[in-house]
Length: 350
Image 1 (spheres, rainbow, N blue to C red):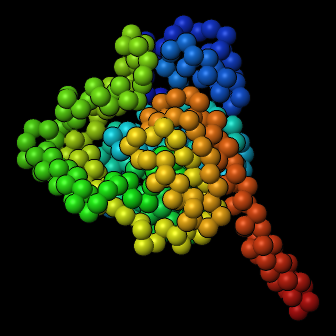
Image 2 (image 1 turned 180 degrees about the horizontal axis):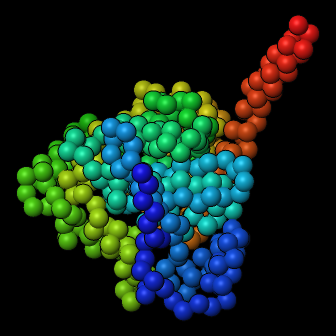
Image 3 (image 1 turned 90 degrees about the horizontal axis):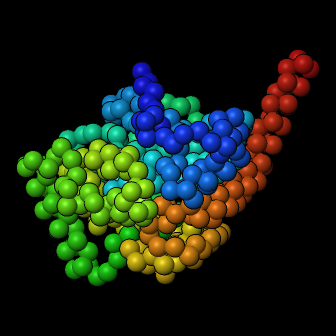
């Protein structure tokens, strides 16, 4: 059973129709992208695609936003970062990407409207969740696009469900997001474990603490307070505090050091060159060690996804991977066609 939800904002919050809004109403991807850019420039909220919930067997109800894209377009699976949601992380990218791709952007476990569970948060479960979503949507394979925490989940999706991943686009992320010595990583993990344990027992399990909520909103949307969309605060307020803290614990423990060099699908790495959360040189390690990976540098920090300029580099990286994935599949596709033709010929000659 699926539930269709609105685009994340009330009608009363929308500005009065103007030329850009009318252009977006015609449904064309280019018009929608132009309207989104104009709204971002004016400080108005960028429209979000509609979202819906879908029940995944033995996993829970997942929420995702979808852009249909052109007919027969490749599918992008957008995986957001820690303490974000699909809408928050990708709101500037939906329209530009929708000109070229079908776009699926789920809220990951504990984030936004994502799956709720009393099981401890694991990045592997997130990868299995989105694989189950692809199954439910009857999508044979997709390009995994991971931002920050979404990068490890995209890589785990490739590792655990390799047939479902046609390529990877890894943004503002690393094979080991929490950098430093073993002692430093242990300290971070311990702090997250204490915070997660507190939210399991105390009153914080119903939402993100207010002390964290304001910095998160400031990171996501840097517009002046009068222009800051209320929906961002609402999105952050939907997080499950305990699961978000456990996600931080999982990130602190995560390392793909022993296996990320074996990634064998077309990959692009989008490096945020002013990033102070995940250092650019650590992001570059992915490109240096994943065979055939290509680099796209964007002169922004870790909050790049909140800047409309981020979408330009993201689109280029995704189109590059899609082109290489298509070329990689041609020999196998031709072999299947030849096999089908030979079967038909054999049947006719019998």
